Image (cartoon, rainbow, N blue to C red):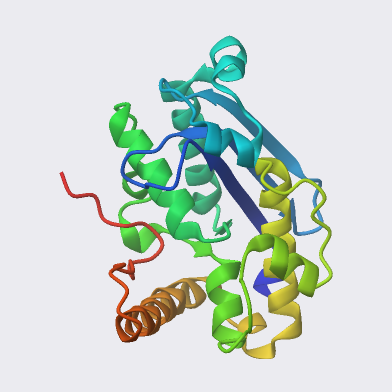
Length: 236
């Protein structure tokens, strides 16, 4: 059986912003799908302990008032999310996350912030992780794509329904469907065994980041592109 036909643990979060070191989880979803078994889904509404900026609310629709009245304590939520993902990896079920570097690094920093054992420690270090990132995969097989490469754009291009973009549950399932589609249509990707696919994505993400950095440098832009995948190392 090819990896994309097996069980996949689709993971997505919505946050207070885009700073992986400082922003917080507001909603999260993990849906374990595929492999000929029923889908098992969990969602979390999280009180991040800080105000949710208006610009973040404009994206995902979650307000500070809502999380304060209905949200789960952040430490509890982060422990549950991390624990569920670790359980899946222990069963050789890969975590599927679109732009996994963001979602997994935010989760790592949240764990450290709240005294929760991080995912990377629960799986025995970085070598124990098992991640599939449709963003990295699509960029590998379609390097010179014109226009954007957001989840919404790629779902449209590959004929995948996404009717509630920026809702964690919908985005998680869309990422899993996109990973499945990419594995099915590309013989090279589809034939990988999971550990080797994870390792090659590390190299592909590094090369993709290097290429983007060179592009920024040529244009005189000051941005620094992060090249480490799937979790940016923590600097104490």
